[in-house]
Length: 336
Ligand SMILES: [Zn+2]
Image 1: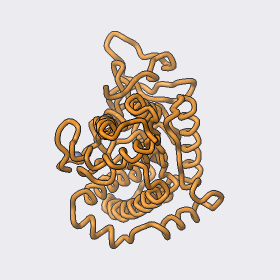
Image 2: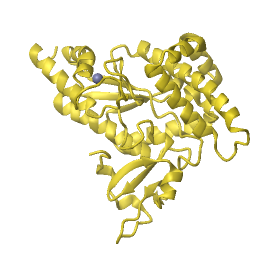
Image 3: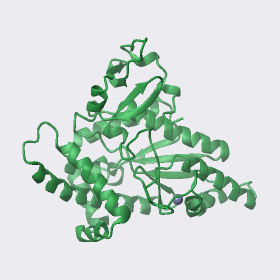
Image 4: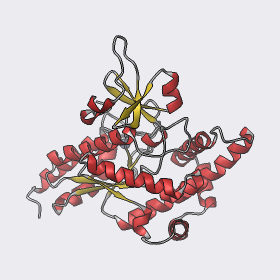
């Protein structure tokens, strides 16, 4: 039993949701209003309240952190770097602030979806494993005690990677025809389809691609449907495994729907994520940019503990340190 009285539960639940929704990633024209959207607060209130009524920790599920983009014009390499670290620190600090509001606290289960669709992106299973292991080490290293990782490997423990994806699709995926119909109807599914198609085009049009642009566009449109199909299957599976959790998403979401879109970083492009970009430091603030754009803007690759970490803009009258281990991204919250 919680020691919170019923009217207090309502107030505290609203306070928790206001904290989360102050970082909301909104869909343009999605219907949200105000600085913190009251309709979205109302929609998610009962899930947060029911955790509180039994005195439980509030659990959030976030499918994210799949694997680095295979395009070297967008990222430093296949392993997590400062872009991921800043996002993990932000998510952990969000849980810390919720714990101040509601002492049983909060946790975010990062449901890495790399294994779910890496074959469609042309990323190897070894790279997915390496990324997930490095992310796990990073969570431990930065002391992000409110974050846990969960992957397809945890669901089908011991199965081959191809078999895992086949079992997931057979059990949970909608048909391509069903998805086409949703996309034709417009709105959020169409925005998602366009966003994913754009990512596929960017990821697959690296220097190794030799075909025509129109052939690549056809290929990417078809692949986008398959990525959405697998993502949807992953979401369905997670809903079944964690029915009481509050769903978060890295994609912009329409108002008052099952998932809350959440920003992971300060970026002018609402679709840009840490695994499609590099962290760029300028005057003590961080933003995300595609690697090639950071280089064009004159930013320099910066190392931490001998490994490439992020890019830094040279400030007038200062020089950029070759090793950033003394600069303090540790305490930085990128959009505050
Ligand atoms: Zn809303």
